[in-house]
Length: 211
Image (cartoon, rainbow, N blue to C red; front, side, top):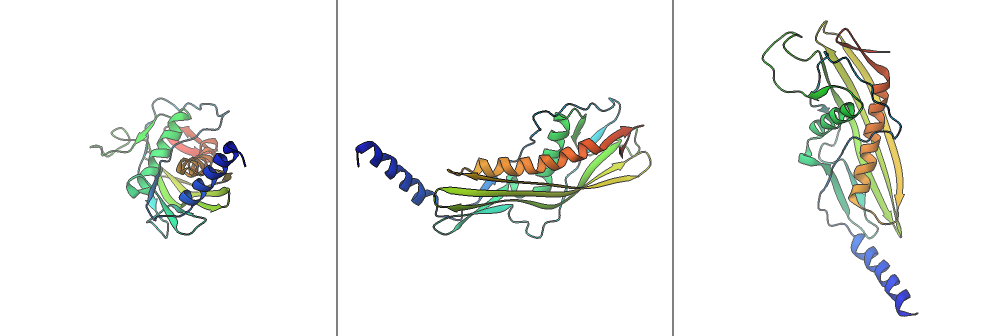
C-alpha cells in the first residue's frame, strides 16, 4: 500500500471512529425558511395587517426534535434554538410568508381592541410533529425529517377562523454527516408544508379565506 492510499484509508477510519460514537451532547438545529426554486411572489393587499403569533407545542416529547443514532453506540440529541419549538416555527412561518411576498410580522402586544387598532389577520396554530432523525452506518448516514402543523388564521373583522393541517417530509443519505444536513432537511419539510398554505390562502376585504 503506497503512502497516498494509506493516508486516505487512515483518514476514513479516523472519521468513522471519531464521528460515530455519540457523546450525548445536545445539538441545536437552526431552522429557516426555504422557498421552492420557481416560487413566484404573491403580493397581498397593502392595507391588510397580518401577524404571526407563537405556535402551541403539541408534541408528546417537548425535550427534543430528534436524534442521531451513531454507528458505534450512543446518540446525539437535536433541539431548536432556545428549546422553544412554538417560537421557532412562528419565526419560520413569518420568514416564509415574507419571502412569498406577504406583508407580515411577528405578533407583539397592541393597545387597541378592534381591527383598526391591531392586525386584521392573526396566524398561529399547533405543532403536531417536528422531527429530524439520523441513523449512521458504515460509510453513510440516513436522515429523515417530518413536519406537521395545524395552522389557524383568525380574522379580526368577523372573528372567523380558517384552519388547515399541513404536512411535509424529506429523506436524504449522506456520506459525511453534518448537523446542517438535518437542519436543512427539517427546514425543507416545514417549508414544503407552508407552501401548501400559501397556495390555498387568499385575502379579501382584509380577511383571510381559503380558495
